[in-house]
Structures are given as C-alpha cells and as structure tokens.
Amino acid sequence: MLKIATLESFDIDAIYKAGIPTLITDTTDTLTSAPHSWSKNYVKAALEKNSSVVENFRVILTENKFIRGTDLNRKRANVKYGEEALEWLLGGTLLGDHPELTCYVGLVDLQDVEELKRDAKVGLPSFMFKAEDEDHGIPYKDGVSELGLWVGSGDIDSGLHYDHNAGGFMYLVQGSKQVMMFPQSDKRHLYMSQKYMHTMESTLFLGELLERPFRNMVYQYISLWLTKPHSATMVPGDVLYIPHEWFHEIYSTGTTVGISSWVNLSH
Image (cartoon, rainbow, N blue to C red; front, side, top):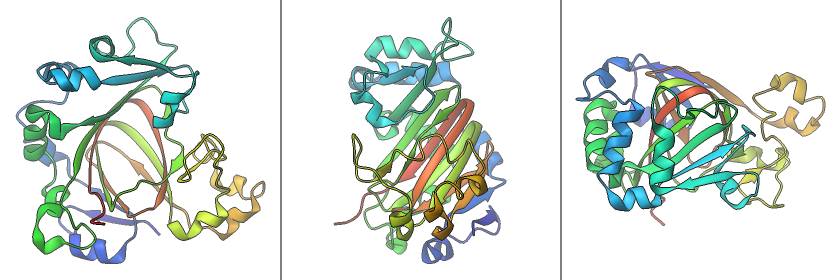
C-alpha cells in the first residue's frame, strides 16, 4: 500500500530500499523560502530570458482533456511553439479568451533556465536533490538528470504509462492531482496496447482509471483483480515518490504547477 510520511519522519534510504510509492506531506514551508513565488507571469518572464528555451517551448491546446506527450503527433492536438506558446501563460488563467480549451505545458527542463533552477534549489525539499550525493547511489546512480516544470489549466489526464528513468519525485506547487500507480509486475494485467502508442503506455485506461472508481472497472476488465494498485491525492506542498518503472496515471484538476526531479538509469 502507499506509504505516507511527513517531512520529519521521511527516511530517503528506507524509501529507496522499500521501492514503493510514498507521499510526503507537510512540506509547504520549504517552498515559501524561495525568493520568488511561482506565478505564471514569473515563470513566463524567466523563460523569455533564454532564447533557446523559448524556441523549443510548446503548449498543447485541446478540447479533449486526455492528453500526453505523444499527442504532439496527433491531429486532435493543437500545438503552439515559441513566443506564441508563451502568450498562453498570461494573466490569471492560461487560456485567456478560450476557456473551452485545455492547455498543457510540458515539459520545461529547468536545468536550462538558471533563474528557475536556482529558485527551485532554494525552495524545494532538500531530499529531492539527494540523488546528487554519492552516498545515495542506489537506485539513483547518475544524479539528477532533469528538473522539470509542468503547468496546466483545466482537467488533464496523462494516461497510464511508465517512464524510462530510475524513478523520481513530483512536488505540487498549485492545484490538485490524483495519481494511480501499479508496479511493473502488473504489466501483463493492464491490457497494454502498442497501436499508435509506445510499448510503455496503455490506451485502454486513458481517462478511465481516475474518472471511474477502480472497484467498478474490475468487473469490466477482470485482469485488474490481479493488480496491486496504489493511489494518492496530492495537494500543494505534497511530494510524491514514484519508484523505477512504476506505471502511473496522473489526473490534474484546475490550474496546476508541479516540479519534478528524476534521473536516468546508469546503463
């Protein structure tokens, strides 16, 4: 089952060894020590200072809330790049005069944006960067490879997938997220589909896992009885640890800002 820890009781070595999802709560005070608030206008201004980041910056606009990175190759996604994409980050909402659309900004690598990276280093819980220490070489062998910024407006579903890294942390700055997770050993029970997808993704559960109670789905998809699901509800200040190659589906509600840190496998 999901392990829940407070900042005071959190033991990073024990979490790594256990290899199960862990929700760390009561970390809000660490964020307030950042020199700036992470408003959308502040993020936009920081991104604009780096021309290479602006050039590669993108937002996905869609009436369908079920989106992920592979939507870049699909006609149903309207993708904006560069300066035009940044304009969608103005004001109190991401969408301005287009409330019917969902806007998803992913992923901005903060390693390329010094100002945001510096603020994150000051404001985020220190254990998110323990991977850089030689004493924490398992399973994090190469140090933090990316510090990512995720921004969204509206209800956004990531789809069920796993990442090719050694696991990592997600810190929620604003909004709320529901997360459903399965260990890699459950793969054969998750109805994986390779049609138009990567082998690490499942189209079957796109938007269903978190929209419908999981207990109702097991009657339609009987193999789910054999899985070991872990679920978490995140609020601002929470950090979620997702272990290496765990499947996860993330459902974000409203305007959300999240920061993640993870590493690549040493091999």
